[in-house]
Length: 146
Length: 411
Ligand code: FES
Image (tube, rainbow over all chains, first blue to last red; front, side, top):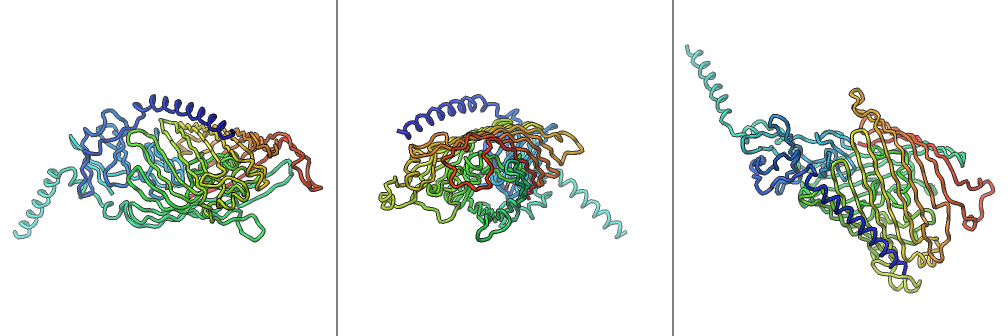
């Protein structure tokens, strides 16, 4: 009996939660500020990733790139003067993979947080995120992987 | 003549070399300018050492007692075997020394292997902390406000709650939505203590029973300055064999004497301002069987929640850019016996509210100095639960004030 009451109550709470969550997801997803590059069009040779500019979504402030078989994601942010800032999403504490948030990056291992620019916001990490050397041509971005 | 010929040849050579650079592809340019790739790398085997710790001074005004304690010193050791496999561990010494009758403790807080499946998905196996609540995964003193961890996340969610098992963590490809699911050993209901929630029932990696198991999962969604999380836990709390359980007339099996927990939290941070709120609810459907067997007055359900706001006074001040001075306020409420079993005894002191006001000062990112005042209010004491009181015992006071001063570090 108690179990039934609990299940009933929890189901109601879950339904409400899920509905709220779905609304948030639905409302947020097109403008979430993060888009994903089309990883299929990325070519990696001699530790250099060639990313067609067409694979980056137009007007997106930030693109997260997953490179096949590469252990970390890469955040590509378009700056002024057709420059790009390319950050390796590897926590500088224990090299854990980072999670992109709406306004930076966070590490689930010990809680370090980084700004969108890669600066440390919360420790234990002490060093900023590694910026990857990047060159842009008319059609491609060339990113030096480490 | 010969010398000037050589000089001209070198100049020509330099000129051609310089011109040759112009026709290099961008990729070639990257290759020749990159020294880092020779020395660095994400796949090298390496061992890293770091840690955290905290110490505090506390004044309990009702008890008229001041104490000082080296609360914890924790050592992290991690090792990267290759780009796919890593080891993470945390070894903790609580209360500075471990002696026969003392309350000091040496314990493994985490010790697990992490297998990266790709950049967004990984598996952990060993002693790990499941994603439930905020403090569990994020318990470094530099990363939360208040000398003490939130009370709700100490006794309702028994942080840092680690158990043995396997967990799968990942993130959806095209939505900033993280998920985790884990299977772990269950709890031990014979260890539940009145007034301490589930805390005493954790195995923490030490000879856990695996006749009973638990599953836990979480969803986390990141949107702009918000983080939303839902997590849940369901697990058995009876690890005895069927034969032993039958002789005690209690339920057995993987989910025997089940414990259910639901938790949700939301965090917001923008510039100097941050806020968070958390709510959790626990249901122990077979509390009457636990009480009948172990006489530990286990409640049928408990809940806890808190809301916190903080403001960094140094935010945006160029001179103080390495420092943070956050003033904060947190209000917590909890009831460890929000419903009781037919054989349970209600204890009003377990229905509590705590108002905490204080500051968190970080002179550098990984060093913290904190101070706060905690105003406590509880329900009435139940006289039938006061057995053989000491003659010097103060009469129970439903309100109390606690002053805390603490330091902490992480690296
Ligand atoms: S690995 Fe990221 S905080 Fe430790």
